[in-house]
Length: 420
Picture (cartoon, one colour):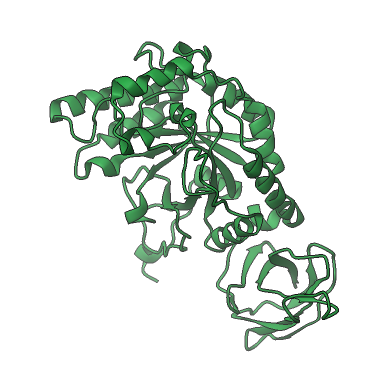
């Protein structure tokens, strides 16, 4: 084989990131007080001076960082990415003299990122920092080159504040370079600043809706799929192993939309998480806290319910890796050591026809390109052993998948296949 076509080995920080698997994204800031999404200032043409008055009513009265981290943990999430500063330029952290447009200079009167980091560590959650590169207060998308370079100095100094004052973090997640296409964003300088303070931090820079999965600066550690299911990349010949992450909203907004009623159901969350892991991608699912900083009730309940499903699977979500095994329909198999985790979709209920909807879809399902001999197959949720047959030489197996008993529907059911 040509050495140039080998798949590179992931650096330790990237390998660790992939085992985090499932994270919470949080978009929260001044815009949350208006309840019309995080782009409200731009879309409604609110003057910068008028919008800035929202700082005077920002209290963070309901922000409990540890409770949010506990919710993430109980929902099966391993990390949280929080907006330390969004496009409106308001910082949830102490900018330490760069300006006074930050949480410590608001009625909140405190460094909310310090609280966030402490809360995450108390609950065993890895903290990540979102930081905008687009800034409407600076008019960074349209200002002169001279002012833009001044802005980049400010941006670099802001990132250094985050990297130097909160201990070890999981990574930084940037967003906004697409706003000034073709500009020299001085990425090398900013990433060098991060590496100087946080050598093990993931560096991610969102490529946006129009460039999902695109590679960027060589220092970046993950591609992004914003609001779109990821595809497993062919990393053959890549100079560096780069991971994959999909970020998605619970409704149609990143920041809270009080009149947005179109939320993901727990079943959809489960299917999307499974689809991400099929591609070896992390799933970063967003919530939009209230003006005071609390996670709304529906989002809390939906995350907890999906978390019940995650607890049934254990290592299947976090440690297992994609395989080349061929499955029917949306089914797929992940591998962890000498075990396969077989994710089965569209499995109907079985039971009395007078009360059971969906018919009987129990029966054999085939797996191809499977040359290792099978020792046993069982459902993870109830330990039921499943019948199977296999032709090892042909690389074909069939598993008789029992349907859901009445009162059960896991959306995606997972079987553990022990190999021998």
